Amino acid sequence: MSDGSAILKSMLDQTAVGRVFHALGDPTRRVIVEQLCRGPKSAKDLAGPLHITLAAVVQHLQRLEESGLIRTTKVGRVRTCQIEPAGLQVAQQWIAKRRSLWERRLDRLGAVLTAERK
Amino acid sequence: MSDGSAILKSMLDQTAVGRVFHALGDPTRRVIVEQLCRGPKSAKDLAGPLHITLAAVVQHLQRLEESGLIRTTKVGRVRTCQIEPAGLQVAQQWIAKRRSLWERRLDRLGAVLTAERK
Image (cartoon, rainbow over all chains, first blue to last red; front, side, top):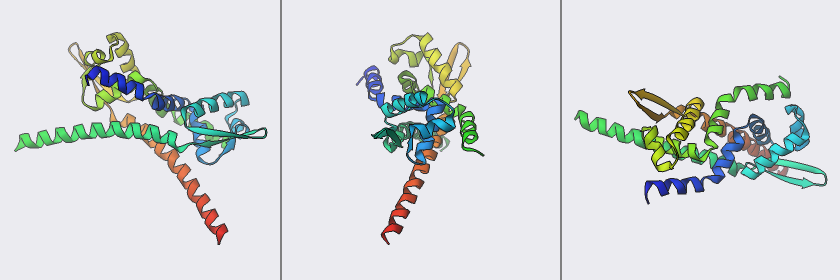
């Protein structure tokens, strides 16, 4: 595969991780994720301490649900939100893979330097 | 500290991680990060396989540099870009901390269920 088509494939493959990073780019959504890591909460429970309207929280929750970071279930009139650990894992794996690329490169550089010293 | 002020503090503290996540929310910037994990490159080297203009690459590089994910050095007329591993680490640590919050909660739930069975 040429460099160009490998890059194109990589961009298409990464829509899921892109949605996760985009969702986590917003400070309110990061606070919601943090709160839900401590346990399930209703949209109303989340809105109170954030000092924002319920409508604004619901918009953030929709974005978080689309990204796969949370899931919500509605029982009667109450929508309960909980963390979806696979979402955070997608982002963590993306980062870990890039860091390992970089570390392998450092290892190769180290090996070259050691060989040159001999 | 009340729940509200803890949340406010957490939002203010997270500007650095917010810039990293925001920068990684864009597919072109993720490809640039991936390319730079394989080794330093000039803006021109990066622009070619991405099929975008040099001016567009330079804009993405500025955003990546502001977020702390890369650093650039200019020698003569050539600007060389390289990965700044601390940037990826900031994002990785943020995620790892939230996952550990969630795992601790699961452990506590597990302990409660075990105690109830006795």
